[in-house]
Amino acid sequence: LDLSHPEGQRIVHDLVRASDVFLENFSPGVTDKLGLNWERIRELNPRLIYCSITGYGPDGPYRDRTGYDMVLSAVGGLMGITGEEDGGPVKVGVAITDVLTGVMAQGAICAALLQRERTGRGQKIDLSLLECQVAGLVNIASNYLVAGQKARRWGTAHESIVPYQAFKAKDNYIAVAAANDKLWNRFCGVIDRPDLAAEEKFATNPRRVEHRKELIEIISAELAKKTREEWIGLMSAEGIPCAPINSMEDVFNDPQVLHRKMVEIVDHPTIGKLKLAGIPVKYSDAELSIRRPPPLLGEHTEEILKEKLGLGTAEIDRLRSEGVV
Image 1 (tube, helix red, strand yellow):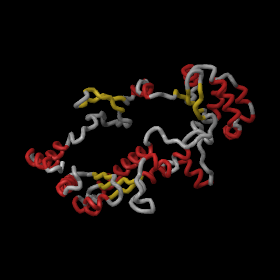
Image 2 (cartoon, helix red, strand yellow):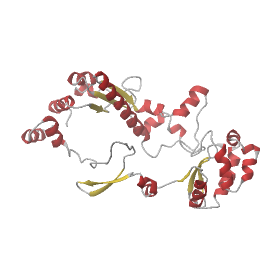
Image 3 (cartoon, helix red, strand yellow):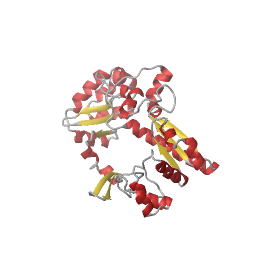
Image 4 (cartoon, helix red, strand yellow):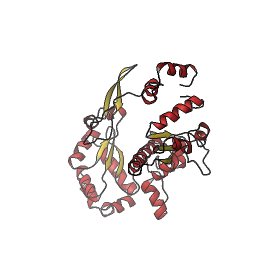
């Protein structure tokens, strides 16, 4: 739809009357110009859930700044705690601030729909990338807010658990999480260094954190003696959390990933069979699957206008000729 066209706006208004949720992520003020703001929309459908996602929020000193995932991860603190200890800040490999905001929006929408079932009233949901990113700092934020502890970059390591990081095995990297004293004792047995568990300066996690540098050097030397798969077999047999640092090829050929149906194949109208990442949520009373591929531009325009608004082919052709759709 051309939302700047009066008929485009009219079509949105008609769709609003037949919908449960309205989701928009325009810059603040744009929906006012388009006649699609909350005040106008709720007049059309008081039961509608209206969800507005912005970069920084609809008010405040940063209101008019443009929001992108990388920029918000910087101002929201995530980039400042991501990267190697002695290196510069880096971004996460995926647009995680965008993803986090989407997940929070999903939960908020479901909660609002549940309330609507109880009250009959819709409402507006307002969330921003900045606020979701700040909330996503979780324990790092609490360490600062409660104890005044300044955060730092740790690479793959953990600020308060040792050993809990990636190590280079003989051939490749492995992630190891001997996250408590019981697991630490087992780990020492697996690497054939029971003396480390008996040594006072490594006996408890606080002591291991205190002597982190010395201990990591020792562990690194030991793990370099066997291959990644050898260590994973030995550690897994003892219940020690560990995993390979997988490539995308490794991930989507992983037997557990495949067993949990995290690769699905759908029919695409132009390329045939298309592989997609599967649905991570499983329900006891519903069998989920991806029913449609990602849509082509405008692929469902005619379907929606016909099924939701009852428009005929001639009317849709007119709208196309005038550039409305």
